[in-house]
Length: 331
Length: 283
Image (cartoon, rainbow over all chains, first blue to last red; front, side):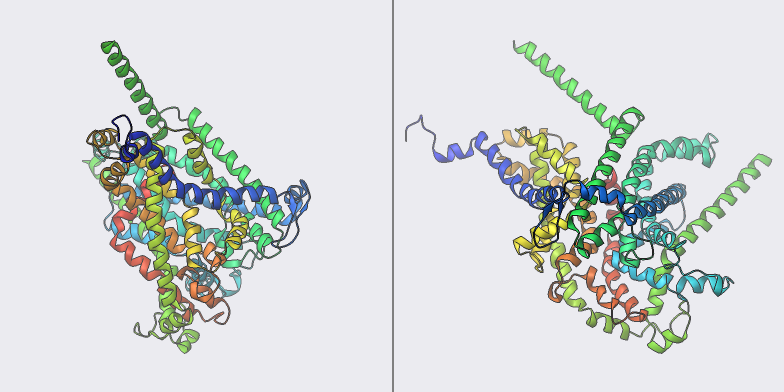
């Protein structure tokens, strides 16, 4: 071989080939999976939303009829009403999580036990949670016995899962039960990122607990709270598990997702279910955009996201300056 | 003096308030599960005749657990879940970190688009998509096969990619550069230099993904219908029919499914908490 021509191994190990090789091999599998299990189904979903379709058999084009039906069907409209309960639940859950996280910041004896006890429900599988609360709410079972032990008359206790005025609250409570501890851990993580000396310094300066909360804790978790509040809007629309595993959406407990699930898998109204999914997606996108805008214009400073961006910008500028200086010298 | 005592009284009151609310919260968190434990240790007669709040006569009565374990074919389910967990976690860690490496360290055409495609995927409502994913699974012949279920779990995994992307942002690029000057290939840079440094991100992924895979029941219920391939999260469905109100058996089943993850949690508590917090920063 002449010196001019590169051998195969030289060519193979050249930076350029290596680069192409590493990019293609490392991205092949994730991209394939993304295509097959996310974007092809997504495309199909959008397509089906314009068709009248069952799982098997012919599909007929119906235009926007499915979308019109999403807004006309009473059960779907009712589901939006149900999701208000879940939004309320999300707010209560966040309030509780914030409260307990704050208490834990102010040193509690037996902290590991309390933390573990409150976090524990998060680890339980959804279906197990379903059985636990079927047992908990069933007539004459756990909750009824507890209330009777506190002297409540058996006749005045409602049927927790059947009575339409209370069953949604009972279901939302299971979700609060399950996720409060996990939320608390998230808040606690954000609060602990503050230098703990600050609390001591503040209490030496005579700041009471409220002041410490207001001026040290709050700022550190402001952005995570807003983020969670906005997410709770789309989250409450996509609430699924409690009604799915406990009541199967009967007695007026069907959330948007549960009804969509039933339409798709039991009634085989695939087109309508897809239209519902697209509508939900649009709402989620709107929430995400709102969140981005909120962070951009309201939390111009101080939020973790923004400061990170600022750091990146500064680094970029420094790099550019350095490059310019280097270029100047060599020129 | 008086200011001092006032502060002291305030401190004591706050202390009482603090502990009362903590204890209340712990009780509420644990009671629904504790009553299940009570029920699981009761014989049929005992269960029918005593209050659900009453302690069982003996905590050594394991008959209900035996029945639950065999009726729901739990041994099989545990093995299946174990296989799924190991394979999915292993693959997710590699695909997630490799993709993040390429997206973070290389400039190439289409990088921005690919990045946005992954980010947008996290917005798509998962359960809604199952309607059409089901059809793809059907076409591919993946239904009622463990491998099909595992591939679905890997395919709809955006969290681990997110975590690794975050982590790469904070790994200095000078590490790569010096390794390359020393003659390392890009593969070498990734596997020998960077991958060992990803440990915290790997732990976070293991925790978040591990909990979600162990508890995943929706896809499992949809794609794994035959008894041979059922996972532990859906094993309990056996109890919906014939056992209707026999909560002593059902509760025993519930407790069995909780035990493994509880043990893991107690061992890895610290990692679980920090993993949760790390994964949530950009939730």
